[in-house]
Image 1 (cartoon, rainbow, N blue to C red):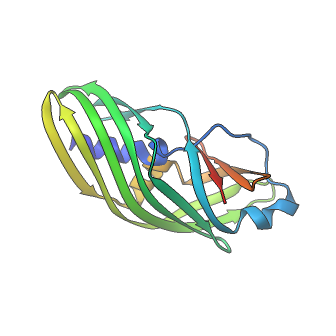
Image 2: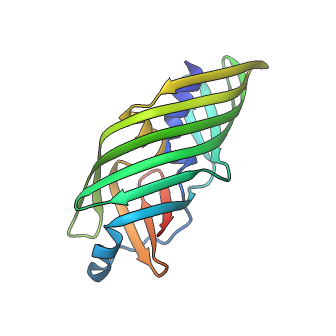
Length: 182
């Protein structure tokens, strides 16, 4: 249960890609940014996530692929990405890697202030923790549900988009910033 809760809390966190500007999309750039397929290049820095078993620090590891496809008011996400995870809690120290293989989709609506209102409709796939908990080797796979996608990636609620040359797209959510390129 500790590993599942940890992974769910990691959310697109580990995947949480980041380090981008915070300006809103200009109306002229909206059509370009709100359409097509984007590849994630980075997510927010290491994050400390709270679980019922203690706090775990998670961070994306190099490699893997995260693709975001934006349609007319719709989005889909295809994830094959790993995250490192370390922490301690009542069950002891935990250290390992979480591999996330999932797809998700939902809707978004552009607001007059330049932000986006993002909702998750569905998700499926698996996440697997491989590592140790209190020195005991642990392998724990579980099925992904839509709340896990929000936990891993922070994709839900208000997002501040930024478009730039490249083309590049940044989505800054409350708990994560995701960076993409075409």
